[in-house]
Length: 319
Image 1: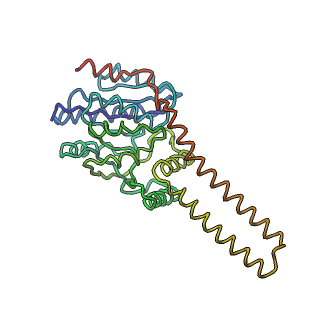
Image 2: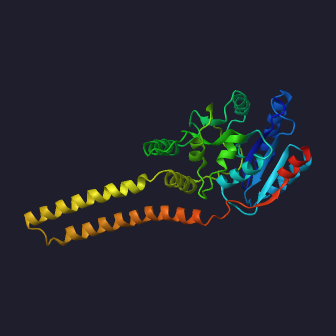
């Protein structure tokens, strides 16, 4: 078993306050797994610097000089969390048998890495880290999250409830994932589409021990909308059904007004115009979102640009 290489991919954006503690805790996990003869001594921790504005990359460079287990990739600018994850996986897959993605704040339980690795040896290609409670969330966040998963399920999207981006993937699973070339990535929806043999490990999410969350309400809403528009045309169907209802309602209202001799009532006309105008604007926005996603995808621009890659340099030396 000791010949299997594990790479832990850690996307980072302005994580200078947590990086020293994160690196120490993850190194302890790697060392312990090597000692247990479960992974190769060439296993690595790969920090992906996603255009940080603070000293994140400087800290990563310092870590690399201290311990060979630490490596890094620096993106040329901020490309977003999902693209940073893909950038790390795109390099790690060349040299690794299994890869784990986890956020730098370590709110996800790193002790579950042991269980993930055990599941890999049991034949599972994908192991999802799933929260089994939301005690650390506010009531608003908990309610909206549950509503979102319920809505996505109703629209036919295959999501793993309460799973974010904490997962283990085998080499062949990552190779399959990299075949998806859309620009607007929603990994929580793409990974379940891959198939393969999968399982779950459950954990309690912790509070962030330092720094601030990089997922405020605005980003969470953007991610939610991206998930819906990336995997279902249900909103377009809703527009269709709404249009049919409006035609039926409008036709019935005209007949009713004609029968009651209130056709000249300007208030009814103004209300109808406001209603129709609002619905048309919403409709155009939804359609525009889909058209915009197609527009971005057909340009086939790179999802990320790697400026520095010490991970590949490090792995080439041990091969």
